[in-house]
Image (tube, rainbow over the protein chains, first blue to last red):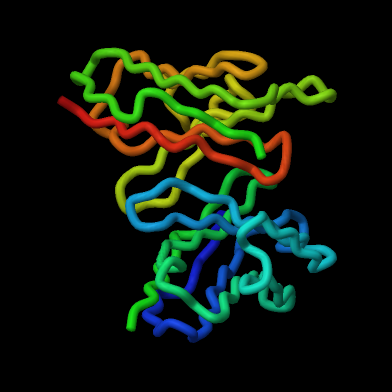
Length: 115
Length: 112
């Protein structure tokens, strides 16, 4: 069965970087795009963008350019979200999601930014 | 960006009673391919969102038939014919006709 398994919670200081992973299984990784969605504490869902898993070409939503980078390692069927120069307002749960051939979401990764 | 507006913000429903959530988009979600790219998700506490309805009115695999979606253009509705305890959570509508994909603000459903 299709699964997206994300890396565990992270506690980071302001100014640091974090890299969240999303490992896919149960389907051909390069068949479907990977999306990233942010959910701040107690808030709604915000689409951050997506990455073409065939070409590696990322598309970022406004507000997620510059410090946010989507990347892939197709050899291990894994997508990554890296956030640099972390700020307190980056504290959120980050989800990866694939909508091709179904609708699949990772379990979410809580990133907490606090001094 | 397309703005998705959901009402109400919250609902408290007696088990077995119906519930209805409205979603309005700032632009038509009808694509030239004839499809309308409006989706409904339920996010249960502590879980990722799960797809209920795609393209306005199609129930996703495994979704009980007490859930139904309707609407067209810019006005959409999700109905639960008889709310059950397991239906608690936050419901979101989402559009994908235009990037960025955007979500409604959510409707929290709780049981009385």
